[in-house]
Image (spheres, rainbow, N blue to C red):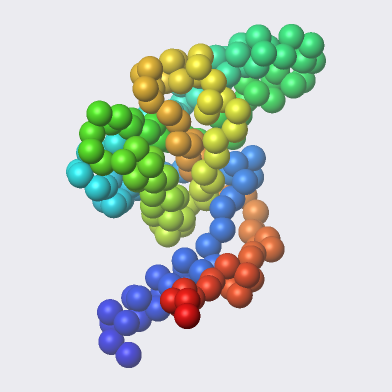
Amino acid sequence: MSELNNLDSNTIDFLTTRRSTVARMMDGPGPSEHDLRKIMEAGMRVPDHGRLTPWRFIVIRGDAREKLGNVIADSFKSNNPDAIEEQVEIEQERLTRAPVVIAVVSHVRRDHKIPEWEQVLSSGAACQTMLIAAQSMGFAAQWLTEWYAYDASVKQAIGAGPEGEIAGFLYLGNGISDLSDRARPEYEDIVSEWSPGD
């Protein structure tokens, strides 16, 4: 088997066995500046019909995680006035579960001939590609949205803009325990072959 085929085999093995690490099971130090750049450069190479680059990546780390966490907590309290303090603390600490979080913001060009749906799919592809890139480099990673991805105050705080939508938050770090797989769909339940009718 050639070296290229070996590489292809390793890639397929990785893709068919990868799984995400729950954010609360992460620790530091997480990706270095060099590693983080590589991860985001991978995210910039996704399919992008029309070359619109309909996504932006916002890195949240260090004290910025706590400051944005305060925005999340304030919005949670506003939307849930009867929430107890422990619930508010959970929301405030969400972004501190991993040393680095990347917010992927989808910026759809509604006036462009490229369908909006294709632009949104490109943002999703960016999320998945960065997730895979991080995991292939040995880091723990999870792609989450949660309620605050749709919250106006949070979107404003991170600079998503009036038309921006948060496609997801990518939590990146180092895993603190071994991963066990979850149930996956059966191949036969998902895959079919189209054939023309009589």
